[in-house]
Image (tube, rainbow, N blue to C red; front, side):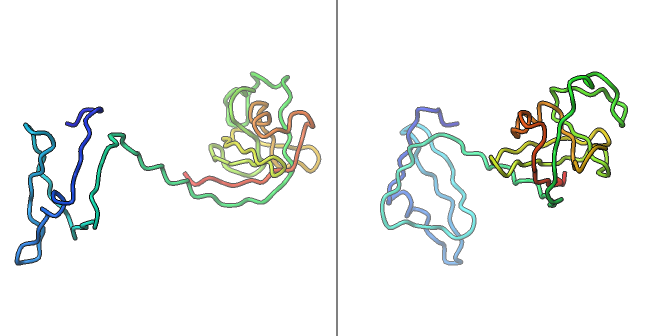
Length: 169
C-alpha cells in the first residue's frame, strides 16, 4: 500500500518497459516504487506510451459520482404547503405528518413515490416522498411539507409555480 505522502514518479523509461511480446501481448513488468519495494503491474488491453515523461504526484482517490436517477417529467403546477396545525396528524398512508421531513401530498401518485419539485423562478429543488393525498383546494397540484416548501422558496407567498419530475428508484 502506498502512503499518503509517497510520491511516485514514472519516467518515460519506466513506461516504455511495457514492451510487447512477439504475440502482441503486454508483458508483466515490475516497476520500482521505492528502492526497497516494487509493484507488479499487469496492463490490460493496449498499452499507451506517452511521448513525454509522466509524473504521478497525487495520492487522492477520485470516486465516480453516482449516475443521476432517471426522471419522468410530470409537468408543472401550483404547489402549496401544509399548515403547521397538521403537524402530528395522520396522513393517508397512516404515518404521522412531520413538518420537518421532505414529504408531500399528491392526488394520484403512489405512496412512497419520489418526486423532484423545482421552483423555476429561483432554480431551487427538493426531492419529496409522497405520503398523503391532496391537495383538495383550488388549482393546486401538490402540497409540500413546510421544510420542503422552505427549500424551494414558496413559504412567503404560500404557494408557487413548480415543475415536477417522478424519480425512478
